[in-house]
Amino acid sequence: MRTLSIIITALIATTTWAQGTFTPGAVWNDTDGNPINAHGGGIMYHDGTYYWYGEYKGHHTYRSPGVGWECYRTDAGGVSCYSSRDLYNWKWEGVVLEPDTVNPYSDIHPTMVIERPKVVYNEKTGKFVMWMHIDNHNYGKATAGVAVSDSPTGKFTYIESMRPNGSESRDITLYKDDDGKAYILFSSEGNGTMHICLLTDDYLRPTTEVARNFIGQSREAPAVFKHNGKYYIVSSGCTGWSPNEADCAVADKITGPYKQLGNPCRGNNADKTFYGQSTFVLPVHGKPGTHIMMFDRWNKRKLDDSRYIWLPIDFDGEKFTITWNDTWSLR
Ligand code: GAL
Image: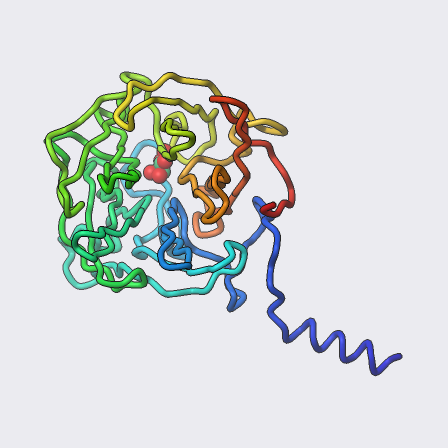
């Protein structure tokens, strides 16, 4: 009996048990046993594998010097990537867009801000294209950045940052529609209004086709998805790292106009988005109509210990809800 318990204890110590559940808000480890460091992330499905891209937060959090508001930050560590076939077990693929530690004027120098990276595949060029929020230490630069790679696991080559059509760009997401057209959606005009901008066919530049939505409503952290032919945007209010109430909105076209449906969250702390902030909605491959809502639960004083809250999206007609669950699995 004693021998059996020693064997079991040894097995538990040495085996990486495959995970089959989501535990929102807990520490999520990768398959090497290290906490997943991919914040403000997004997921691309490609050839049977999910790739999770996110902000690689440095291990030291500090207040940005000389900035009045609660501007907590870490050195920009670039963009990390993890891969998975089942969405529960994530393998570290490394930092796929590395910060430029040599050129102090680079957009991706560690003193800069690299946030909310998202990646899509361009069928016409065969390239993987990443868009992200590029800023300086006080978020005054307000630009969108673009990088490109031949492989989903990089390395990505940084191209440039810009203000699309001269407009400020902070919180950003990237959406590729079924017709192959891709769009960036970003908080603009002092974070007051969201711009939805069609990209060129190679996804590397903004076009001049821009729609303004949520005018003067200060919505941030956009996450877009499509269900039954309609487009949905989940977003947050504008309170920095501190949580606020989420909103969702629906439209017949990606460019809007959007009809606001109110807060989709249900359960404890639903009025504070479960202490989280939207980052992405993941359509589950092979399960039509199944979507996972991804939130970040920011820990502003220790940003690399920010956690992940993934919850299922439940539809009822045109509307949907997102209900807190300590532990859940895909059905
Ligand atoms: C949030 C934004 C985050 C980050 C943070 C900085 O509003 O969604 O991505 O930029 O502000 O305070």
